[in-house]
Structures are given as C-alpha cells and as structure tokens.
Image (cartoon, rainbow, N blue to C red; front, side, top):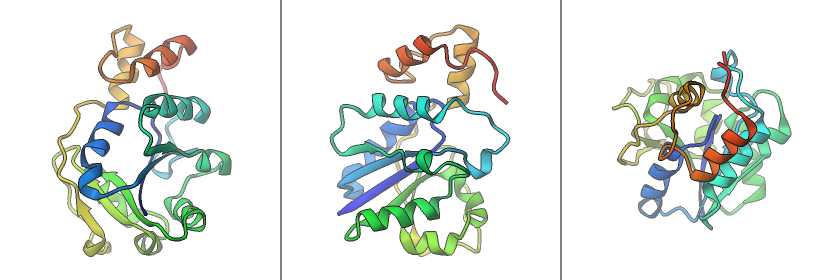
Length: 195
C-alpha cells in the first residue's frame, strides 16, 4: 500500500490543499491520502490559529466525498509542537506494510534542513513536492534521491487570503468547499486578525 501524508495548519482547509493532491494521486499511485492537521507547526510558533478541532472539522468537511482521503487527529491528540518524524513513526506502526510519501509545497523546500531529525524523516518517507510558488532550491544537507516533483497545476489560493477576505466581509466562494464556507461563517471564524 502506498500512502501519502499531507501535514499542515489548514487554517482554513482550502482548494489548494486538496485539488493538486487529487490531480497527481493516480500518477503517484497512492492508495490512500491522509491529511494531518498540526497542533502547532514548528515554523509557525508565532502564529495563532483557530482551534485544532475547528481545523480538523473543516478538513473532514472538505474531503468527505473522497473514499481514499482520511483526516487524522494524531497530532491534535498528541498536542505540543507537531513534528513529522513523530507522525511518520506512528503511521509506520499503524501501517507496517505501507510505503509513505510526505507531500510538501515547493515553498517549503528551503526549510527541509531545519526539520527535526530530517535524516530519519527521509528514511520513513519520500518527499513529494507540489508546485506552489514556482520552485525553490533543495538544501545541500537533504538527500535528493528521496525527493520527487509531482509537476502539478497550482491553485492560486492561500489560507492568509481567505482569512483576509472573511475579515473584510468578502466572498470566499470557490476558494473553499461550500460546507467549509458555511462552517466558517456559522462559527464566526477569522473575524478578527490573528498574529
């Protein structure tokens, strides 16, 4: 079994998180895709996000129509700073016969050398890089043989843009799943600026 894992804040979960992944799924031969909302991302410690439970619920709503897609609460249940190495070790214990790919955007490539226990992460999974910003360079400390470029069409949307639109009272239709939009408005999420 081939499993793709996509971790992130997902604040909120939007089309850019899902559409590119689904577009490359068959080519990458993934049997399952698991989204993992982070409790607290190590590179966003100065950013206050909405509750992990809201972010989990929005990811579940956005992926509800796809049988091969799961949303895992593993990092939310663990709490604290979320590290990919811990999540991958847990998934290897759950799915001992699986091969794993960890999905990242090309805008995250330059930070790979700063990931906790990056050598171990690269033993546990390949990185599959989705195009988001137009390409970045790989740090010299990272093994290039464990990185695959998916060559997808990018979706021009960001969580920051969506939060700004909500605060400004503008429509977010087409940027997020309709049920995610209703959820955001129902709970009054993103009405105030976050740091």
